[in-house]
Length: 115
Length: 111
Image 1 (cartoon, rainbow over the protein chains, first blue to last red):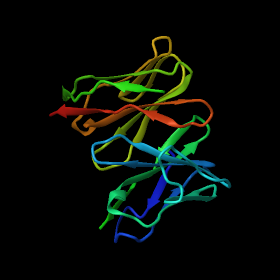
Image 2 (image 1 turned 45 degrees about the vertical axis):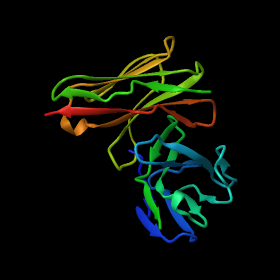
Image 3 (image 1 turned 30 degrees about the vertical axis):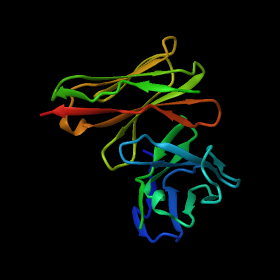
């Protein structure tokens, strides 16, 4: 099946720092990737759609200047949480779209803790 | 507002039984339908996709789609304790492939 990796799997940082999360599709090219966040016992919340070679499309209420997305290649999208605050602590999950079949495959997620 | 509804659960079944998970969706133009499994603390894992009316079987899993009733279900035969997880129904509509998720139902398989 399609494999998506994320790095790092877990990160702890101080308030005010920036954190970069990488999402890679390992065995297929993904022109579209998605970024989600999930709070404990809550549903996945779509943050943005990342399109290779173009600007990301953000969902309503998501600050594009705080959550910077770059999709520079067909296998890599990055999410940078800038000036992180404790309320940004969450489980961040990416997915990559396999166009044939319209299926999204999820990465293992990154657990961010901001102190 | 596109909505996907799942029974709130939790659902508990004995080992070896059939678990039946149900989902309804509001957008009649929905095109693709998925079931994801999510273990606690992990990310969702795609277990079934279905696109046309009828049944689709993969091992112990069977997805059923009825577009007229806007209903999609997942049957898990011979349930195992390892099937204990939250099951998410998801639907896409339109060209952007965005998933609309249900809230999920937690399945517990009792040994």
